[in-house]
Every structure is written in structure tokens, then in C-alpha cells.
Length: 117
Ligand code: AMP
Ligand code: ZN
Image (tube, rainbow, N blue to C red; front, side, top):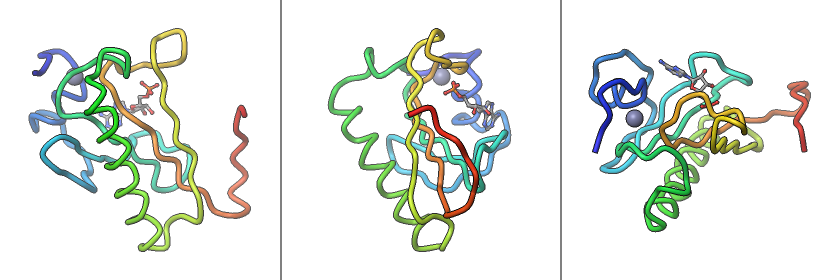
């Protein structure tokens, strides 16, 4: 299931370049083009669902598995000591790309990033 005009669907189809750091049958992870911290990564479902609310529950659970796997790799590579996971759902919540994805923000002591909560 994909959407012809969606930027993430275009990345998944290989029509737009990206730096892919992980792939399985249901998800890809790419580096965010506008990183908030070094290694800022997006874990993106291969199927086009807009938000978690219209994503099948099982796929939403599997998204967390993929997020965990990518995060463990970042720790192993020495690129993270901790994480913030950001999940924007809906335009009003700051979602710019309407294709379900989780932000992984790798954190290191002294990185200076200020979070909302
Ligand atoms: P949001 O929809 O607000 O949760 O965030 C969408 C994210 O996608 C933003 O952090 C953008 O920097 C990122 N983004 C948009 N286009 C691309 C692209 N072509 N490659 C990588 N990241 C992108
Ligand atoms: Zn899409």
C-alpha cells in the first residue's frame, strides 16, 4: 500500500535518495535530513498509513521492535547513551509528513538538546 505523492513512499520506492541504516520486510530507517541531534533517525513503515490511529495494531507493535533494534545498533556503534523517541501524530501535533514514522533522537551527555517534557 503506497501513495504516489508521499515523500516517504518515494524514498521507499527508491525515487528519492536517502541514507538507509536499517531495513526489514515492514520498515526502513533513514537519517533525518534535518537532524536535531547527531544520528537523528526515522523509522518508517513501508506501508502508507497516516498515523498510529489508522495503522493496524500489530504493525504498531512491530514498529516498536524496529525502533528498539535500530536504537540498540546506535548504542553498539557508540552513537547514543540514551534516546528520546518522538511520535508526531496529526498536523496539529507537528506531523509534517503524513506517513507513520517514529523519530529516534540519540542523546549524549552535554548535547544541550532541550525537550518539551
Ligand atoms: P514529522 O512529520 O514532523 O514527524 O517529521 C518529518 C521529518 O521528516 C522531519 O524531521 C524532516 O526533517 C524529515 N524529512 C522530510 N523529508 C525528508 C527526506 N527526504 N529525507 C529525510 N528526512 C526527511
Ligand atoms: Zn507514504
